[in-house]
Amino acid sequence: MPHRPYVIDQMISAKAISARVEALSHEITAHFKGTNKLIVVGLLRGSFVFIADLVRELDLPVEVDFLEASSYGDAMSSSREVRILKDLRGEIAGRDVLVVEDIVDTGFTLSHVVRLLKSREPKRLEVCVLLDKPSRREVDIKATWTGFQIPDEFVVGYGIDFAQRNRNLPYIGKVRFTD
Ligand code: PRP
Image (cartoon, rainbow, N blue to C red; front, side):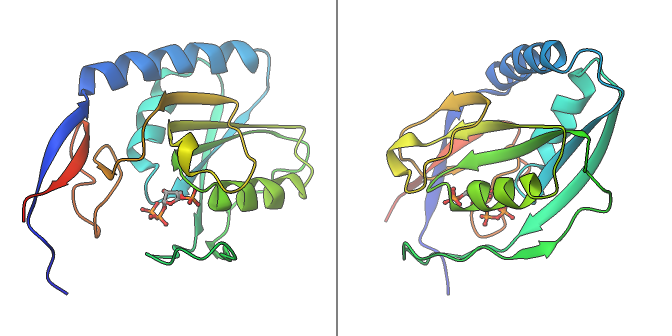
């Protein structure tokens, strides 16, 4: 289906993201200080840029792993089912784990993933999300660390897509339709 024409207006600059990532990484480093290994779990695909920047700022021994949950596309039903398309490569039992996500919207994806990973009995499990849209929340889930709270706008960039495009923008922008 052809897309409606749109432009992207910058919402959070690359510089502002970078400063926030640095501050978050300091808090995360302090929280997990002394760990023998932190397993940083990125949720594919949207978190790939954020996790890449975040792990390079962490002053901790880090292992990186990825997990992919199903996308439910544009469906707006509240009985959304989340499926795991790609599971972790490693074990997390007894380990320190940080889940890294690009955006929390309804909360279905994150709450499902957190429940799943906690069932594997990690020693500690915390969550870091870059963007939070609290006005959209349907499931009660709160990240340990949040980069930015944003209004209910259609955002792209810094890993986040619109129909698989615009993930490579260095900033967060909002989509504005021009038709
Ligand atoms: C997006 C985003 C979160 C999820 C948030 O993923 O990356 O994982 O939706 O929505 P929720 O809070 O309503 O569950 P998407 O399914 O678009 O996949 P992607 O990460 O591969 O872009």
